[in-house]
Length: 433
Image (cartoon, rainbow, N blue to C red; front, top):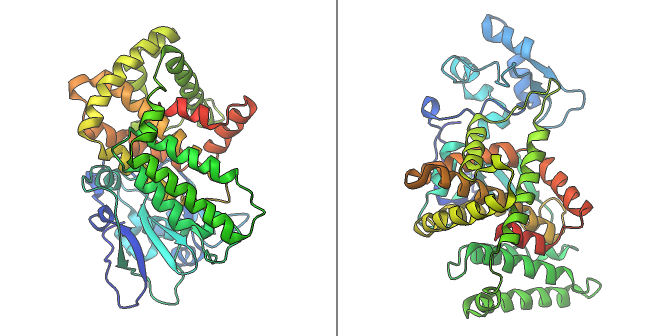
């Protein structure tokens, strides 16, 4: 998990954000650990190496705590049995990996060796190399990068002939794909990134604008020939860009003011999502197991908004007051949430994420943004003038570890919204407003 050199003579390249070139594991200086709180899968080649250790305490630990899975796959051949605190038993007292210390990094599984780096496939020959913001140091570098989101082509340190360990994406031919989202991948992702970073609109307006374009694109006649569909997609994107740049979209949406009913509805939605995540973290004994840093942030947010009163009108008023304070902080540090959104939509490989509809992919992003912003507003209310970028990094890395790495959370939220007939852009607009 240390520095990976970005130099190689293989000729393979990847698009890499600027912050990742600066990244290296900070070891014992890290405020958290990447070796606790989630499952640790072992690939087959690494498992064989570890089982070939024939003596010593490490060999004993391997045989005791690593077992082959009933159903295996490339990167998930075996799994580490976590201890009662959900820590990897290979951790030392100083919270470092005993495998890496004793036998070297070449005995680490692909998951451990690559983290927080994530390779995503973008068509047949392109690769993006990004970082999960569940790593505190990666989150700090990404979120506090004042130069804005940018990708540059860099050499990839993986030999030719060796498979890239993709964690997401689509390796099919985008040029001739049947899916219009794949054919228009660069157009749609670049459009979304451009809008997210356009400070002529408030962030909620930027998210709403892309959401509206997604809805309009989905509403077009998909039975048309590919060239006509693609022409319409390009036309809708161009119209949206013009509306963004000439100020007309800002004028059209200024009337969508925040009122008490909006704030109360926002609270109800966010609390339901929060409760759902807590419910998913409850063990068989009834104990809630969540990342400690996230629990702290969540408690600070609810205290700041006086959620314990249960009075929605009173907390709506508190939320409005706290939002004004946070807006002032956000105006001084606009890059933090912009960088979060940019990194997340790239990690999601928007718009070709997991065969989801275009609008659902964007709703996923809006839901996560809404929860993060809500917590930050509450934390800002708690800390007052002492609220800082460090609080933002702590919340976002711990939220990412708690929510982004849980594959079941967003589907359950979508199911809840669909059941309540609330799975619409109008609901998303309330959440992010």
